Length: 530
Image 1: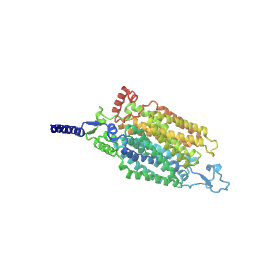
Image 2: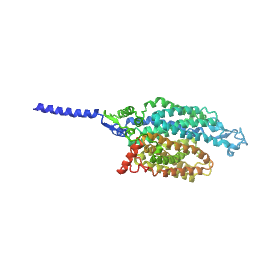
Image 3: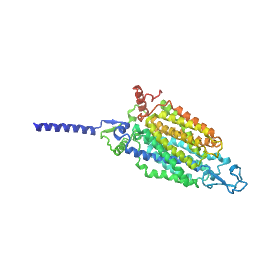
Image 4: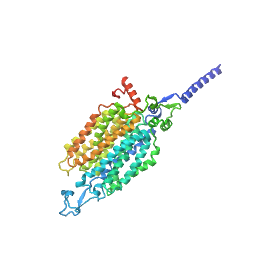
C-alpha cells in the first residue's frame, strides 16, 4: 500500500515537471520589447550599464568638434614690438597702428584670427566658420537621422559619424585660408551630427522606462568631460591651432575601430525592420550579462505587423505628432541659441579664456547630476520649462552686473553667467530626452534629428550675436534671456512622458494613449485631437 502511494506521488511530481517543461518549451509566450526588457532582461543591469557607457563615450568627440573654435578661432593678446616706441600704444588699439609696430603674443600661428588677420575690417569673417559648422550640423541631422531610422540603424550611423568626424577634423588642420577652413568646418558639422542623435536614442532604447531619463542624461556627462578636456588640449597646442584639430581627430578614429564592436544594435529598431532573430540575440545577450535568462518559448510581438496599416505613417502626416514636433523645434531654436551662444561668448568676459571655458565646462557636471536627480522626481515638461526660464532670468540679470570699465572683472556677472549656462545646459539635456520619449520608434531618430536641426540653427545664428556683444554686451544678454524664457513657455502644453512606455509605431502609440486617457491612466493627456 505504501509502495502504491509512493508511485502515485512520483507520478504526480513527474506530471508537474512535464507541465513546467511544456511551459518552457512552448511557443505561446508573446511579449513586446518593452515587456521583455522589464520582465526578463532587467530594467537596468550590468549589460545596459556597459552599453550606455560605450555609447556615451562618443559624446566626448561631439563636444570637441562643437567647441574647438572657442580656442582655434579666439582673438589672442597682442603687444607692441618695441615697448618704448611712440608709434605703438596698447590703449590705441591694433586697428589704428601702423603695420609692423605690433605682433601677436603667441605668434601668428596661435589662432585662425592671428594667421589670417581676421580683425578690424575683416572681423566678421571670424564668425563665418562657426556659423557654417552649425549649418552643416543642421543638414547632417536630416541625413543621418533618416539613415539611422530607415537604413543603417543606430550603431552603424554612430560608427559612420565618428569616422567622418575624424577625417574632417584632420583635413581642417591643413586649411590654407579662411574660406577653405569655413567649408571644412561645415563638413565637420555635417559629420558629427549623427553622434548626439544616435547616442541618445540607442541608450534609451535598451533600458526600462524608469531609467530612460537617467541614461539619456548620462550621455551629457561625457559631453561635459569632452568640454572640460578642451582647455587641456588647447593649452598644450597654444602656439598652433592646427595641432588642436589633429589631436581631436585621433579620439573618434580609435573609438570607431576598437570600442564600437562591443556595442549592440537597438532591438527595437531590429524588430521594426523584421530582423527578429537578431533582436532576440541582442536581448539574450543583455539578459545573460544581467544574470537572467529569456524563456525558451518567448517570441517578440512586432507592432508593425499587428497594427492595421497598409504603410508606415510619417511624422508630418500625423496631426498630433506634427504639433508636438513644431513646439519642440521652436523651443529647440531658443535653447540652442542660448546654450551655444553662452559658450562662444566666454571670450567677451574679461577673464582668462582657459579658466573661463574650464569654469563653464565644470558647470556642465552639476547640470548633469542635478538633472539626473530631478528627472527621477519631476515631470519632464515642468523641469524643462523651469530650467529654461531660470536661464533666461540669469542672462537678463547679467546686464545689471556689467562693469562700465572693461578692464575690471565682474565676479557677479561671471557667477550669473555660470548659473545661466548651467540651467541652459539642463534645459538642453532634458529637451533631448523629452523629444525621444514623445515619439514612437519608427520615427524617434528622425524626431530627435529635427530637434537637433533647430538647436543647430540657433547655434548658427549665435556667433553673430557674440560679435555684436563685443559692441553692446547688454543687447546680447537681453536676447539670450528673452529667447530662453520664450522656449520655456512654448512647451507648457505638451504632454508628460515620465514613466510612459516607449511605443513602436504611431498606430500603437495613438491606440494605447487613448486607452490610457479613457481609463484615467497615465496617458490622460497624451494624444491631442487630430
